[in-house]
Image (cartoon, rainbow, N blue to C red):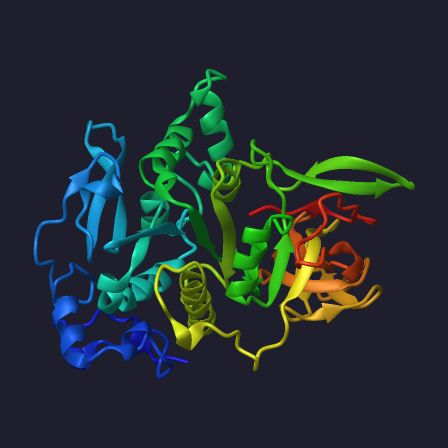
Length: 435
């Protein structure tokens, strides 16, 4: 894939130093003349210039109609206020075409230490610039949703909350149910002032600290438009994950031969994807490897997947990425997933690789004491695929071992590739996972 230079801010914007997004492969800019490329890139405010060509404005909300068509704009959007009464803002990027069309939203770093989405968004906008006059609709991006978390290399917001669990409660408070905390108000305003503009939303994440992830997508595979988005990204794995209006994950679990509705997963839901889906926005979550670092290979795959989505829904023509990459293994689609957790403390060693298929009874991990004596061995409770794994050997009892996806059987799918609405899960060995 690319070199380190691919992710460094470029110098003065000329055609000579507009790099390929992920190395030497095709980019959105390859299809137009150099002179047109030079002129259009110089007209935008962007990180690859040595310094901004004008002051970046601060606004109270993003109203796409207020911004000029046929160019890329950047701004700060006021979300909440701090203890001095000063605005706390998020950076927003807008690529607005002259023709009408869908609005695609891209978000990153809602967990502040999950940073691989930031260069992904930057490169998407870098390569949209030459095509801006042919764009239909718009692309809206928030390259860092959680400034506090990003600055402090932490997953959480300044009050210790996980922002991606706060969206449901934020909208409950809006309806007079309870009082919204600072994190809930932050999420509500972020959604209403920026993301409510979108018809499609792609939320970019990575693994948490001390874990390693495959390249995978979470999506409600019952919905044809969402299932299509997920497949266009061409991840290693797709996890079917359903959210109701409250953001809570619902599945059907067969227990002792009796089918019943169950909920699972992530501390009560409240994800951005759940909030968007509940409001009619086609939404998926993409997991791009590990936190606090850039995985260039997976960033490249994500870039190609987003380009494919933009082409498919008609925002911009990108024939280079239109076809799926046939050199990559087929995407594995899971009906659900869960984390296995330890029941003893000690030094943890997890063996399988991410995206590896495992079978029931296969050895997965061991826990030894500090002297090296084996305390416990763990095996796969059923067939599945490794979505993610713990990489932190310092294991306290109850810590996570491995994120296991249960592969959806062919009978679960409709003819159009969606998953049937009345899904029955025939086994459950852990907590069903959310975003």
